[in-house]
Image 1 (spheres, rainbow, N blue to C red):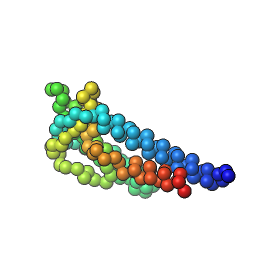
Image 2: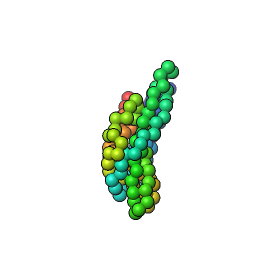
Image 3: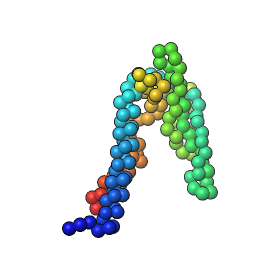
Image 4: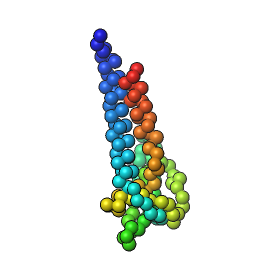
Length: 132
């Protein structure tokens, strides 16, 4: 008994969503593995970019920039962009920054150990589409 065109289409969409989620999760995991050392870093500024939230609404997105020192050399690491307003600590707040000992300029400035919510949703939707 073969799959109908509609069933095949849903299966392919499920595979695409699940594959995209797995690639993103694997990338996060590898970055987390590489950035195994940590130091205290200071929030020095925010990077701001403007994006269209909808056709008539342009919103600022903020990413914190942390400054940290490894072996006497100072580096800057940028965190993830968050919408609308900076919901981070005030400037000069000290936070732990994870970095790659082999390449200290590679860091996880504000990434938590947990994965991003969107990646998990993408995975769940992909699995749901494949199993229905």
